[in-house]
Amino acid sequence: MDAIINWAPSIKANRFNIALAANFNKMELDEIKTTEKLKNKKDVYFGPREKAFLLASAPPFKISFSIDYRIKKFTAALRLTQFAEVELKNWRVLGDGDLADAALADGNTNLYNDLVTDTYEARMVTDVSMGYDILPSLKLVVGASNLFDVYPSIQDSGWTEGGGMWDSVQMGNMGAFYFVKLGLRF
View 1 (cartoon, rainbow, N blue to C red):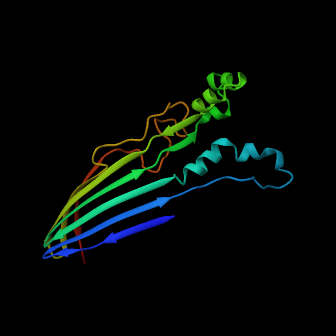
View 2: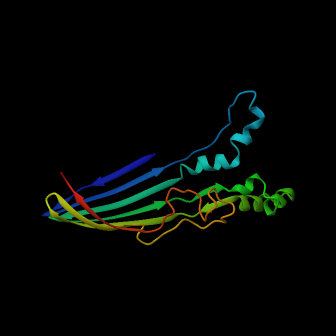
View 3: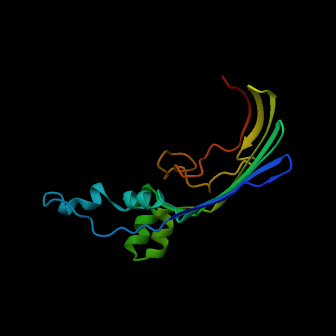
């Protein structure tokens, strides 16, 4: 479900645009339907990792709050985005010949699930910018995406999809990005 609330008041020369946007998801996987020839190979082409990646593609929620402000030639913007917790299955789920396999063999499913699951904790990211209309057709903007340099939860790099500290998650993993833009309108 998507929900958006928007309010754009003007107070004298001050113009605001205030928005709250939210996306809520609940995904469940039912029976996997396939052909007779592939019936016994479901875990090969759509195993626990693939199921977890599909479920993680629609996190439980994402909420964004933004305020845009303009007075004459000056603009400012603030956006806060809250990302939900996401769980992915790492490569250990295919067998690591180590701790996860031993836990599974011992029937310790709680330890096994902890070892094969990468949990990305909920995070909030802050974006800000300020701009000035130098000319009617020329604008300067200075800002930051992910101002406070927030990263996803660090994982064991030997077990992630790309072999790094994170899998590909919705909030990104590039950290802070500071910018200066010069916009020209024709």
